[in-house]
Length: 258
Image 1: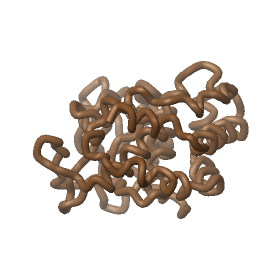
Image 2: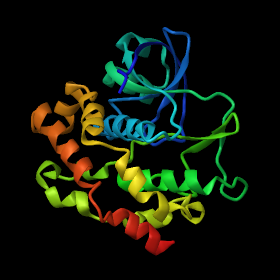
Image 3: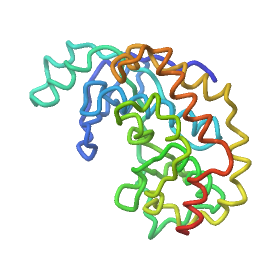
Image 4: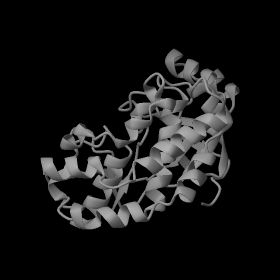
C-alpha cells in the first residue's frame, strides 16, 4: 500500500460537535481542509488505530473512502482557542494525529431518500461486519453523498474488541459473530451479500493486512496496549487474518437477520 502522507495543521477552523470525540475541520500546510481526529480525545489512540486500519482495509477492497493522512499538531494552536474544552484537547493531542480529507458540500446519506446499488451496499456491509463497525446505523449513517457518489467516513468505532482487557491473547475472538449488524443502515439494500462473500475475503491477503497494520505509528500502539508495538501489531494481523477464514460468522449473521 502507498505510504500515508503527513500534513501539518496550520489553522483550527471549526469543531464538528456532532461527534462524541470533538473532531474538527482544520487547514493544513498543503492548503487543504481535513477532518482532524484527536489522539487526546476520549478513546485515545485506539480510535485512531481503528480509523486508519479499517479505512485502509476499505480502500484495499476498492470501497470509497476519503484520503487518510497523518497530521502533525502543534500545541501553540491552543493559545488562541477560547473554548476551554477545545483548548485542552489541542494541548493533549500535540504531536501526531490522524486526519481525513474534508468533502465540501457533501450531504448525509438518507436511507429513506437514497437507494444505493445493491452490490455496493453489500460490499460495505461485508466490510463493516468484518471490522465490527457499530456506528453505521440509520441514526448515524457515517455515509456521505459527494459528487453523486457514496463515501464511507468515521471508522473510529470499529475493531471495538481492542477496548477489552487481554484482547491481544484472546484468539477465539476473531471467529465471533457480530449481532449488531442487524442495526446496519444498508442491511435492507445488501441483497448481493452471499454472492460477494468469497470474493471479498479473497481480495484481502495476509500481506495487505500486515502492510496496513505496519503503517500504525509505534507511539499509538504503546499508548493503546501494554504489550510492545511488535506484539500488538502481530495481534491485530492475527485477528484480521483469522476473521477471513470460512465460514465467516459475521456474514452468516447478516444473512440470517436479512
